[in-house]
Amino acid sequence: MRGVMKLDIKRITVGSVLTILSISLLSMAFFWFFTEGGDLTLFFANAAGVASSIVALAFVLFWGLPIHLVLAKYQKTAFWWYTIAGFLPGPLFIFALKPFGSDAPKNLIIQSSYCGVVGAIGAVLCCQKSFITNACGRTNHSLRLCMISPKETLAGATWEATYGQKLTFKR
Image (cartoon, rainbow, N blue to C red; front, side, top):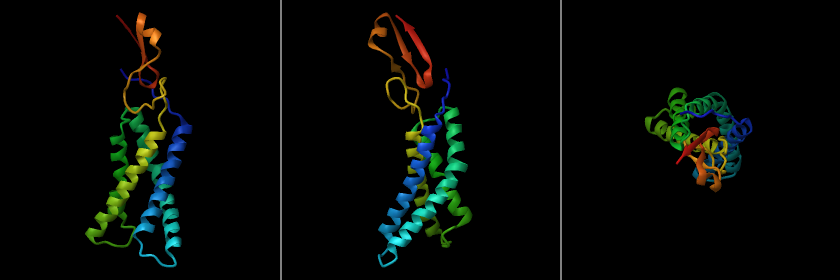
């Protein structure tokens, strides 16, 4: 039996902003770590962070939110669904547009792997923040049952399933 999905726009917004910030910070850290140093390292790291946040904003709006709504509709809320959905656009973006100017297959594979991993991390962070919390205070990432109170288990067990469904089991 499927529950009714309740979307919380505030949590989705927080998850989206967290995704954009995490992708920006990961790009800045990656650029800072793998550059050789010099006078312009800080400038280029910040530029990489700003550019990646603009790209991340576009991907969150046009890929992440629609995928999130589809996954939420079909209750595919496990982390691995979001990991796959976050990883896929990276290689597609890199191989289709070749935005970094290097068309060698080795470089394209490295670039697409980086973009895929960063996208997967961002998607998992968005998934973590964008689902409602059930009666036990746990975030609903799968169809878990949550006991309401110990008193109700004595007469007839009442459980609240994911997204507010109430099920009563008689002994």
